[in-house]
Amino acid sequence: MDTTHTDHEFVRSVIPGQIASVTGRIRKAEVDALVEAILEAETIFVAGTGRSLLMLSAFAMRLVHLGLHAFVVGETSTPAIDADDLLIAGSGSAVTRTTLAMVEAARERGARVCTITANPDGPIPQASNFIIEIPWPLTKISNGELMPQPPGSLFEQCLLVLGEHMIMRLMDELGTTSQEMRARHTKLE
Image 1 (cartoon, rainbow, N blue to C red):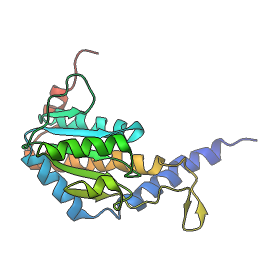
Image 2: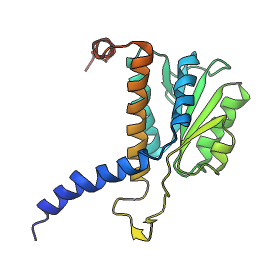
Image 3: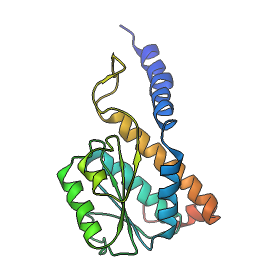
């Protein structure tokens, strides 16, 4: 059975359509609050586990390309967090214990915390200063239909797209050009 056409149609229409549908429901005021907090922070830290952390690591790299101080929690070169800093935590489920511990530790040190999640009622966003909700249930069932992607994939895809959207907004706010960002890109590869 030839599935080339079917696979192509799925990637070309289903996945982008799902991403557009979910990201279109993210509240602008929540994104505005995080962009403002990033601009006010001395240093930005990102935290999470698994694929959520991978998406936020890409976001942290882009923040560095913007000329901001950004670090991934858990890396050996990550400095201490303090009251002038911002932690951005990503957790679709909002119940991951290690991420919750990082959020609590950041709050104890006076840092502001934003959690990006699909579950605004979970313990991680409840321990945060503010949240961005990516409004999508993490189960395989949505609107009575079987979710065609693996569990969590749509949240992670939306997290990556949201990060890129915020980078574009920050480029405008900071007056940073693509050429300036490119100049800050690693040259050791």
